[in-house]
Amino acid sequence: MKKLNISLIVLAMIALSGCSVITGIFKAGAVVGILAVIVVIGIIIWIFSMFTGGGK
Image (cartoon, rainbow, N blue to C red; front, side):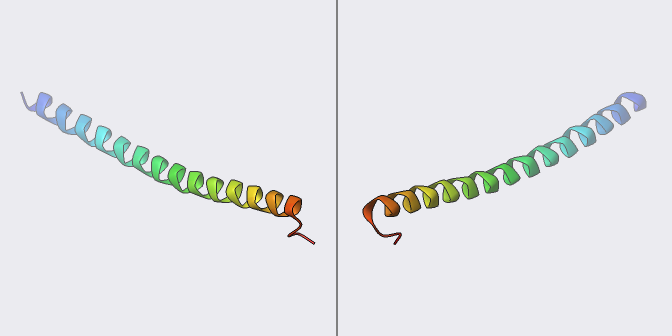
């Protein structure tokens, strides 16, 4: 019975550390996604201003 309890504790520790890693990956992905959207919007504004004569 003690081996079963220790196995469950070890399994829970491994699972919880995996969740922490996945959380970090998603947070980094969200930041990169937000930056990518800002860059794309900036490029669109820059191209639009070139066609309307604002980039002279």
